[in-house]
Length: 500
Image 1: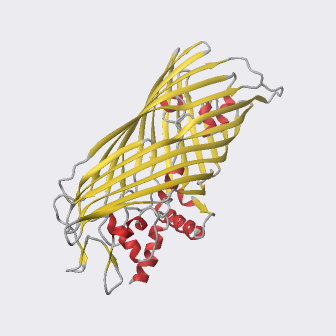
Image 2 (image 1 turned 135 degrees about the horizontal axis):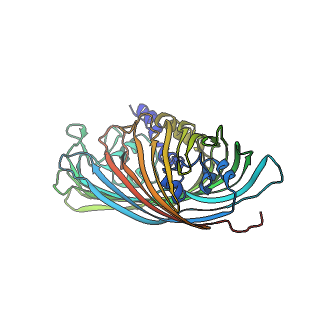
Image 3 (image 1 turned 60 degrees about the vertical axis):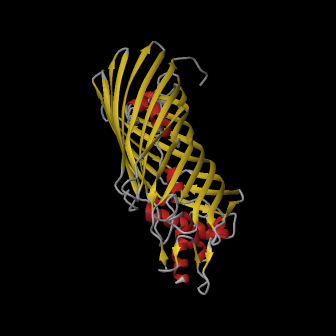
């Protein structure tokens, strides 16, 4: 049985032994530009219409429309609320937490260059920075349920596997069963040769901080008002920090010997990468516009720093309280991640001289994510295990955005809606999940000066999480619902003189 368990459990744990798993792959590849207030106000559907510097991150052909130099900066504010419910006893209640952050979603400059060619009317240069992901989120859970994190640690030790941030820390507190050489915990009932299912109190807190941004540098041109092209280089970068605090206590004295435990895990990550984007816009008529773009994978280099502590308290056979605290070494690890290709198409139509309606769609296959490690003995096995999880758990994703603008000079009104399919193939209950975002905004132009305001509301998005993993014993399921509200303000200036 031990060898069979080992074969199955290696696939389960290799991806999480050092903190890297399909969840990290998902976090750093499932992204979308927030952009300027005008871009956000139209639901992110501005790609076929262009002009905005944010299109350097979607379809760089969009900057080919610009007839004048333009500079803009967009500060913002985000509020993230999360409800978390621990599965187990019917009396468990959902807990609500919130996190508020001031942000800089976008800033950019477009320099319009005229050509001497009769056919090529513009050759423009642009540089932009935008936020691709907001990792800020805090939520806690509390309630009663059977099982314990030390059971998962004991399972791992029982099959001879190592986890420097979990099982290895619990080794002084497990039980070595005489005669069988099996490793158990205080939650194992030797009288019935099975695990205890008595519910105990547990509490946890996730505190996640950080963001991902991208600098895009590119060129775009306009051929006879019929065909626009654009190329850009993207340089994304991110910082991420996660603190997980977890406690268990047997306040009703249901588990003999066990008193309480505490587990704390800290992860700090940072990374930088690069990608290329190319796009075209085509105008069959003066009113109708079509767009298409392709994004290469982003090639990431990521640095992780991880550590954990485990405290365990129990009552010995003589009635004395025993236990202690184990602290892991700080592990630093560098790994590489290649994200999927992205394909985009869009269409827009001018509504007289008073506005436009546009639609934009994208597709990515998240099974093509590839993670690789190369600086320790089991790097190849770990890479293969995480990539196998990615293939099994993640799938493809479609994004769709629809929006428009009504120009009531000098005021512009905007609205949009966005749909993002969460790329889970078939994991827990998260298949077919989607994120809906509703946007509205307004702008005001006065000569060369303009100001735009937008608000985005992301509907509650359900996720399922396991505070710890087990193989055969009872684990825990945490259900969360996240809602995010963002407000963006863009201030810009156009028509200034530059040397390009």
